[in-house]
Image (cartoon, rainbow, N blue to C red; front, side, top):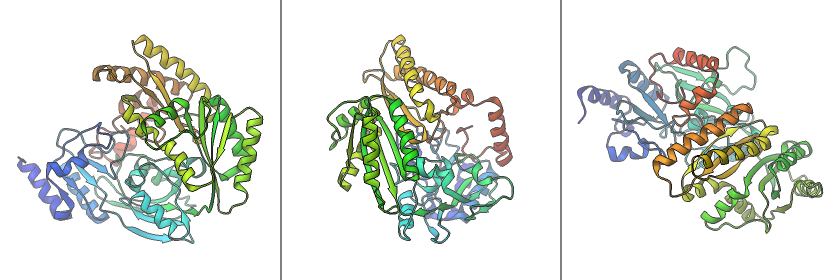
Length: 476
């Protein structure tokens, strides 16, 4: 039963958004109060679904006046629990999924202006409709939203060429914690008029305001692609190959995705309709893609470079694709790792970023350190190392034995996290490359961020949100 205060809050929100904008039944709220991994669960009196920026501002003004904490949520596809409420029942979810309009497409300026709740795949489609290209590509692109991508500074498979979401946005519209609207929807490549407020909100995980609109960068639509799968005896040799291809192929190099052999074996075992691209077994594999706006000998270029790489001993084998079905089959192997891990059992996951030049040394030292730590703790761990080699982002995960208890898994997770993240710090890396901090890494952030960095971030938080109502318990 709702108390008087909660009932009054819901009535105010109802007046702001109408019946279509509220979800009050507990059963209907389940899709919002549990993250898609099923790892975090919360409770709220109401989910509010504004249809536009004006309604969002009205919601925030009500929450500001009543000191009601807000958890902003897009497609609810995050990996760190950043969009899941706590169990207190004191927070409300503001879902942006009804804010799904394509506001403007400017093919001359190469910009796309969208509501924050637009699904990423729809933004890609809107770009294609005017023969342009929006390059952010994720496994969840059919359900994640642009606003969520911005709030977490999403990466994906094309960061090597096009950059993270921060690099793909020119302007933002944001509802501030007091309900005022900052309109920064400027499609400018140059704007040297002071602090870059846009960058403060990108990656802030809903702790500084609610992103309601964005101006995104568009690019020329690639019309030619060529893809290859290569095997290599060591990660160091793949890093060398990456450097060679960047020098020889330039911006045509769009993707360079790495999978250890253990990662590939896991996919082949747990994901249906997959098969190994090569007959041999090497320690590491890479999926490489070149693209261009015209077919200027891409396949011949890649074939020549891989032939030279094989002569130089950098790779053991290479397979070039000749059809879209083959390309899809190769990408299914890379994209199937997350699905395979879920089916395989308990996995200690890491999303780390390192200087590309340090990747091989990190992986070698981490393998020894994790083995030593798990052995001392009386168990074993299987390294599942894969990721976006081209931008230095490793998903350096550890698969634990399937028969461990929940308590044992928790203990081993804390131990392995400390080993891996301490080593990441030694290599001047980051404990979160693209998944965000959320509630998953919040406590660890205090260990791995310098006191001065934490102080500066907290000062910014207090300046924007003195009542601490924006996504409390996340990031900071």
